[in-house]
Figure (cartoon, rainbow, N blue to C red):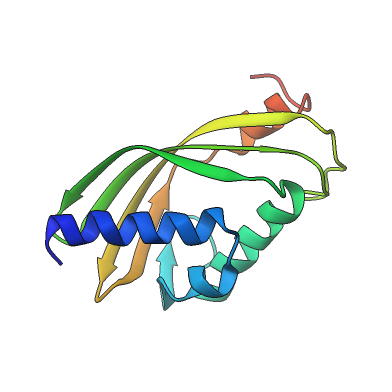
Length: 133
């Protein structure tokens, strides 16, 4: 894909994520996607997102910056939502969180085949009042 096509592709992917449309999200991810330090495969990807959306039903990402190079995307995002449901065993706190996220994707034929990104669990827990920053 050309750089402008990759940018449009990412905008469509982010829109599917922000609609919490897991079937649409699945259509952007290779069935055998590799994720650094996380279980691979599209089902694990979708399950992690479903867990996030259960805990934060209003979760949204906002793109800050996107860099495209060949078949790679580097994205700086802000993710935010209100903790209204159980998330990773944590009962709802009703707190609003806002975290920085950095993600690297390899996209082949319109599908995410590789992913690595920043881990924001510590920041999330801190904002939920469960851990020190």
